[in-house]
Amino acid sequence: MTVTHEEYTAFVRSGLFTEGAKDTLSLAGLGLGGESGEVQDLLKKYLFHPGYTLDVDELGIELGDVFWYFTVILDYFNLDLEDVMMENTRKLCDRHDRPHPDYLK
Ligand SMILES: [Mg+2]
Picture 1 (spheres, rainbow, N blue to C red):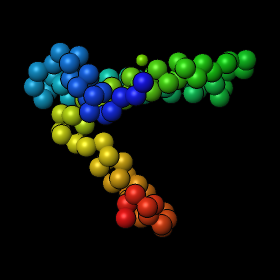
Picture 2 (tube, rainbow, N blue to C red):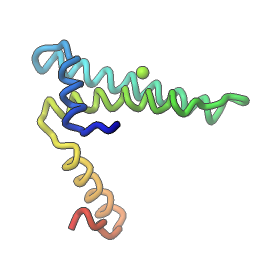
Picture 3 (tube, rainbow, N blue to C red):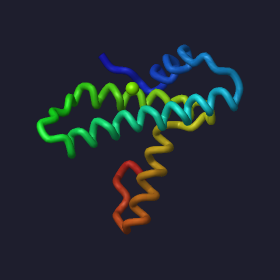
């Protein structure tokens, strides 16, 4: 099984119950923060709680929750995931004086 970002975006859109910018972006911004916090908590326990065993599947589930809200924001502003990844690559390469990978050429 595979999923494209377009298919995933359609799924996210189908589950979104908000209307208008204030509702949608409030939900996305707050949700992104909350789910990022869940990822942070797992990492904190992994690094600082003696005897704690990280459940990598659970980490993946929480990262998926982050991605859901991230996708809401991308979709709201009609941003393309590949464009975002490429611009991020370009920004980081330029900042750290690294050569651009082939996919930017
Ligand atoms: Mg979660």
